[in-house]
Structures are given as C-alpha cells and as structure tokens.
Length: 151
Image (cartoon, rainbow, N blue to C red):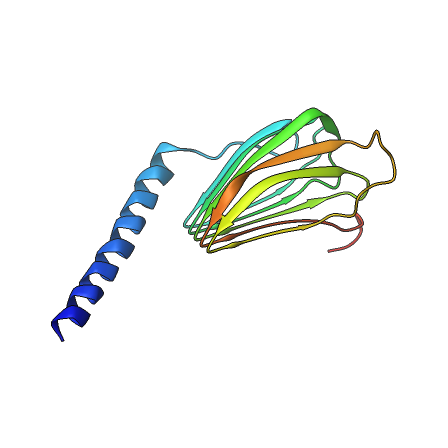
C-alpha cells in the first residue's frame, strides 16, 4: 500500500508542478498577433487562441500551446519568402490550415504525442514554402489544407 500511496503523491505533485509552472509562464509571456500581423507569437496556456490571418506578407513566428489550444487559419494570408513557424505543444494542441498550393517542410517531432501533416505536394516548383520546426509532448500538432469556403 505504501508504494501506491507514494506513486499517488508523486503524480499529484507532478500535476501541481506543471500547473503552477504553466500559470507562471502565462503571466510572463504574452500572446501577440492579429489578423493583419505578418509575424505572430501566439501563446495558449490554460485557454485557447483562434486566429484567421489576412497578412499580406506572412513571415511566420512562434506558437506555444501548454494545457491549451491554438487554431490558425492561413488560407487568406500571403506567404513571404523564408516563412518559418516554431511550434511547441505541451499537453495541448495546435491546428494550422493552409491554402492548397503551399509547400510545407516539416521538422516537427513528437514525444508521446502526435504530428499530422496532411498537405499534398504542389505541382508548382516555385510554390510558396512554409518551414515548420518544433515539438509536441503529450500533445498534438496538425497542419492541413481545405478550400477557403470550407469550415
């Protein structure tokens, strides 16, 4: 019975530590970016962030999801050359929609989580290219295409 109690206390302490750390980070790192921003720094800790970008020269930025979720729609954005997104998800999720015709280069990794890149390779060798770097730990990152009229 003692080992079970010790495991329970250890688990409770771990969860409490993650929650306290997340709250501290939430107050220290603000989220910034709006529909017109060419560069974003989105942070979702204990909440969610929704962004439908209309940027005229989207360069990328960063996204951090920790016990929260981020949904970004880039279907109305124009991609700048050298665009790069740094994505990190811990016990949360990030979903990105891009328009058909963009090329995606993924350097994403998952640890007890998942990464799904559902983007067909464009025929155009000069198609806009978005580079993705990052990690999903006990969370997920998904990138996909849908026509602009689709939900």
